[in-house]
Length: 328
Image 1 (cartoon, rainbow, N blue to C red):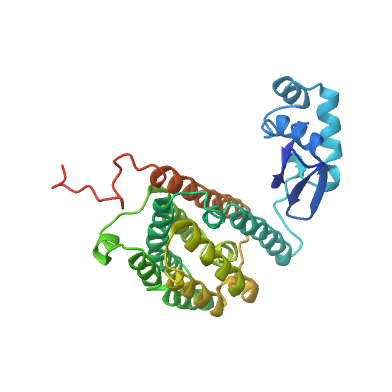
Image 2: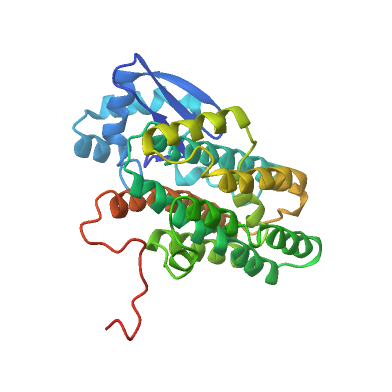
């Protein structure tokens, strides 16, 4: 047996008695000590190592490895290449799996959202402004990525993506106004360039939407805000005013953009048009899932790069500047 693992997300606090395991099918409570033990061998459950090989690399006995894998059987996350299926009983079965995966990755993005650290005042003010700069560039580019997908779509999907792109066009101006409220000039923002992780997000989207234009609906389910909770946003703005000494309403334009997106129902595009997700080729399906997973991690990387670049400038340009021929 050369075990592999289906998507499994762990939330472990060593101070708590139980950890949380999230799969595409269910959420489980696992004893923390057992979860920490499993993580020691998880890295080697790639389908390239036997039970004995995993034991050798992780420092467990083969019996312990088998026992831990057996204990995860109810979660359905352990499988081998012999379990692979290339045909499915119904189209809805594929969509069900994709929807569940998108739900997991959307939740993970919410949990790792850099805004959580701003509300606690754990990051310096330049990171707050740097985050808004990256949001400006990302939101400006987003409709162009959707348009790229629309050019490879046909019929109702093409019309839907064209409308989606049009509805997103110009929304970077809401972020621009928030940056102006924080002391940036319009020219300063418009002539800046994004961090590489922000550019990577745009590249990955275009690559994905060209491969399968309907994947834009899956991505919308991952990244679009599910709701607009005014009380929570008011609390967030109050925290920013307290920690960073900014005007309470400085970020109102940014949140107005979010409110508009929610009102347009972008988060429900997938649920409302699930019949347009028709990816029948297994190879393409595998690529779509992998690329959406990559995109989720690209957003994680963006948060890390924002903190790495803007926390301590040490002479780094603020905002990031284009290097053209004249600059050399």
